[in-house]
Length: 117
Image 1: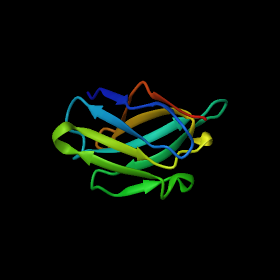
Image 2 (image 1 turned 60 degrees about the vertical axis):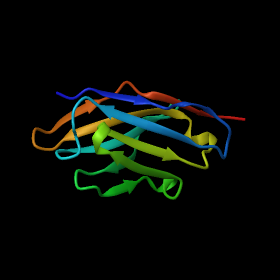
Image 3 (image 1 turned 45 degrees about the vertical axis):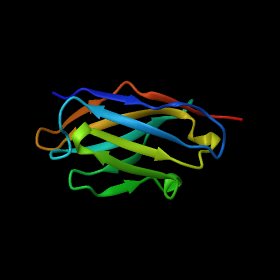
Image 4 (image 1 turned 90 degrees about the vertical axis):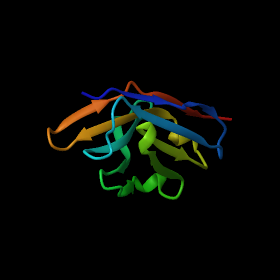
């Protein structure tokens, strides 16, 4: 069992930056892919970025070059650095850990990101 918690959301002006954190209650890097999803107002939840268990990073096209994933194994934490934020990035951001062997998904409760002037 893994419990996930996201932090770091908030209100930021267009062009600003935020760093989201996804913290887990145990080490997840060896056996889980960690994904970030977001749900924008009135939209379906969409995938944003992934760091796989072997460290490969992939991104949604609209965030490439602006969002960057990193991880700290000692803290069981994955970070999503978001730069040059746009109003269309406004959403609730969710962290998901996918445990490959048992095909289980673990979700956090989300953190609100609002980009507005």
